[in-house]
Length: 392
Ligand code: G
Ligand code: G
Ligand code: MN
Image 1 (cartoon, protein in one colour):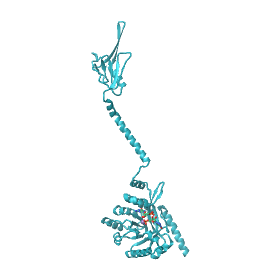
Image 2 (cartoon, rainbow, N blue to C red):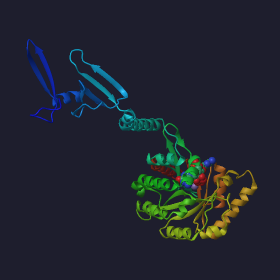
Image 3 (tube, helix red, strand yellow):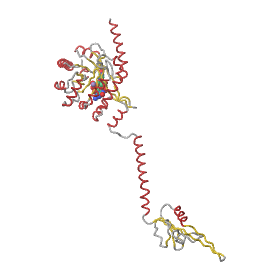
Image 4 (cartoon, rainbow, N blue to C red):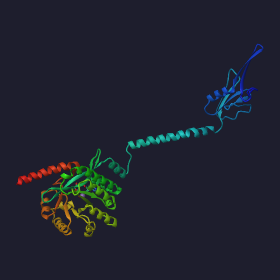
C-alpha cells in the first residue's frame, strides 16, 4: 500500500496471515525495503512487485507498468510469498555506463602504459641526437684536458703547453678530438666545452702557479664559432684571473683549416682579447690559405707551423725552402713561430739551425692528462739540471 492515514507518504508492505477465524499482520516500513533494494544493486533499476503495485529504488509505489528494461533483464518470484523482484537497465544505458565508467579507466590504462614505455625507452638507451650525446657527456664531465709541452728550441726548457681535448667515454676509453670536435662545432657545444676545459686547466694548474715556467704559455684551440661569441672574452678573463697576474700567457690557437670571416664583431673581439693580454696563434699554418692581410687583421702573435713541413725535413727540399720563407716572414711581421710534430733529433737540429724559437712534438713530450703535467715538469727540470751539472 502507498501509505496509511498516519504516514500517508511512506509506503508499507503488509503481510496478513489468517487462520482459525483470526489473523496476524506484519508491516514493513518501505524505508527499510528501499534500503534493501538499494543494497542489492549497484547499476540499473530494481523493482519490488506485489500484486499490481510496484515500488522502485526511489521508494515510490505506483500501479503504472514497469518501464522496459531491455538490458540485463532479470526477474525472480518468491516461492513462499506473493512478490517478485525485477531488475534491468533501460535501452542504451550500457553504452552510457561504459562511457561514464570505463573511459576514465581506459585513459588511465593508456597513461600507465605510456609511462612504463617511457621508462623502458630510457633504460634501453634511446637513440639520441649528436647534440644530446655531447651535452650529456659535458654534464657528466667526460671531456678532459691533455697537455702537450711546448719547449724553447735553444735549450729544450718547457715554456708552456697546448691543451688538447679528450673524451673519456665509459667503456670506450679515450676518444680523439678529430672524431667529436667537428660534431661539437656543428652543434655549437664547442663553446661550453672549451669553457669547461679552461676551467679544468685553471683548477689543476693555478695552485702550482709559482712553480710553472715564467710567463707560462697555455694554448687552447678555438673554433670559428668562438670568434662570433662575445663570451669568449669573459672566459679568457676568468681563466687569467685564476692565476697570479703575469704568471701565465693565454694563447688562442685558430686553425688555418677553417679561416674565419673577419667582421666588425670579430675585429672588436680580438682587440678586446689583445687588450687583456691574450695572444693569438694561427694553427696548422702553411696548409691553408691565410693571407698576409688576414694575419694583420687578427693581430696574430704566432704561427704554428703545420706538422707536415716538419715531417718532410730531409725528405724533400721544398719543405726546407718553405720553412726558410716562413722564418723570414715571421721575422718581418715580428711574429713568433712554433714548429709542431717534432719527432726526431734530426728535425730538432734543423729547426734549431733555422732559428725557430719554439717547438712541440713527441720528441719532447706526448699529450698527457693535466694532473700529470706538474710531475712531468719537475722530472724534466731535474733531467735538464743533471745535464747542465754533467757538462760543467
Ligand atoms: O689532440 P690531437 O692530438 O688528437 O688533436 C687533434 C685535433 O683536434 C687537432 O687539430 C686539434 O687542434 C684539435 N683539438 C684538440 N683539442 C681541441 C679543442 O679543445 N678545441 C678545438 N676546437 N679543437 C681541438
Ligand atoms: O691543434 P693541432 O692540430 O696542432 O693539434 C696537434 C696534434 O698533433 C694533436 O693531435 C697532437 O696529438 C699531435 N701531435 C703532437 N705532437 C706530435 C708529433 O710529434 N707527431 C705527431 N705525429 N703528432 C703530434
Ligand atoms: Mn693546436
